[in-house]
Image 1 (cartoon, rainbow, N blue to C red):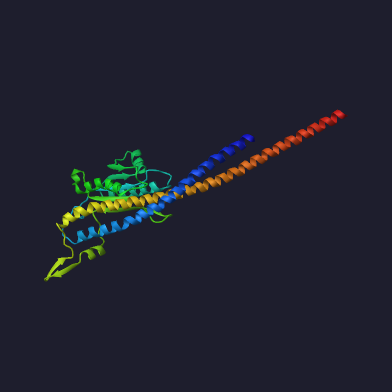
Image 2: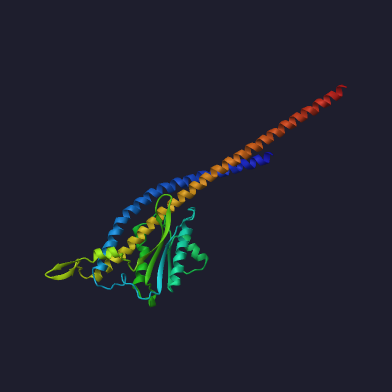
Length: 310
């Protein structure tokens, strides 16, 4: 019985140590979420205004640019998947991977060859284990991405969209990441970055004209040319969108980690209570057995003494 009590005590000590670790990780993740939320909020205005500027150029000119013009029969599409470098975040990375798998199946059903780019060790490990080709990958910055990281990720994608498909280029660029909705809700999303999708309302606003000397002219003039403006704006558009997606994914990952670690801490507490009850029961049984042995021994000694007196 004493051996069983020692086993319970060792398990309680081990689970208590684990609980301290998960509680610390929960607090660290909670502190990081605040910073990540601020970065997401700070990146939104720039990305929104840049998108508006690119939309204005695209709709206010007749220039056919490779980055804004739909290909008649697209045959190749690039998919950028953003996952995490680390685990202990519940289903965060697996949900993003599932969304990428769904998008890949959809594009394949449209008879498009899919070229995969991956951010994060979890996504890279998933594709590597299944021997699936990955064109390019990046790791090491998913918890705290910077704009420089976004530029590094965007560079090969911009190069691919500007090249002919026969030379290894692509006709479309899609991105899969986890959008931060709230502390309790993070949703995997699929979005097409290029060619630029222009909403009808945006097109109408951007296509306004005015009259000068009886001649109808576009609302915007571009110098040196609309094509040069697009060449300058669109790479920054891609970089800003990828940067925003990286920040959204980082905030989502920290929220998922906090939630997973809180659940682990609560489970550890419940397990400690259960083990403590079992340990107390084992100790009570051990004490009861010792008392029974003492009483039995005393009774036997009393019986032996009474026999000798006779």
